[in-house]
Image (cartoon, rainbow, N blue to C red; front, side):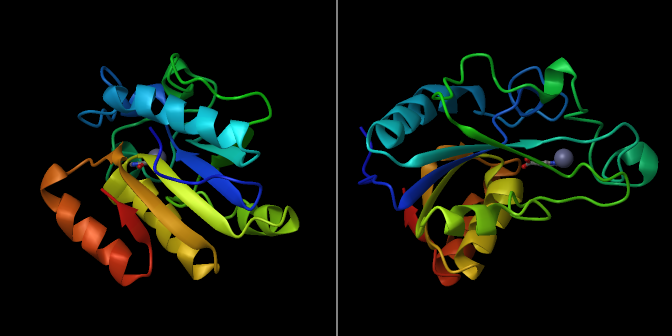
Length: 187
Ligand code: VGL
Ligand code: ZN
């Protein structure tokens, strides 16, 4: 059961629930798949209450700057239009879910769903004041997205149980950092 009261002033932002970040993927995050049922329930609750659902996806070109071969930190992942870049097949995106693609320039990375996408202005245009964040990976793109949401002036909630970290050992430090930045963390 969701602990969030959703309404039209709230957006649920589901970050990067893509095959490459789930079991068997190119950059698999332990426990990624297991989040799907909880996120589906959250999306259904949000949608029913008139909250907008937004799903971001990491959407890299070939030879992206973040790939090891190009000197970046990650193995190749989420290459545009590949199976690895597709949303997890069991993710039940409600009709009307807004898709946001990010990190599509060859020469730069973007961890936050707000980075270079115009998402903040889109949400403001729709009178959204509150953003609820979940998904993958807690210590990378979820972290950056929640920090940007708070910095943009949205009341920001993180659903920690609907998020998993690349480096689980850093989980608590990450949650503390988000709290420090004004994000309300639901554990
Ligand atoms: C992500 C590593 C590289 C993420 C994206 O979505 O958390 N992590 N690119
Ligand atoms: Zn990436």
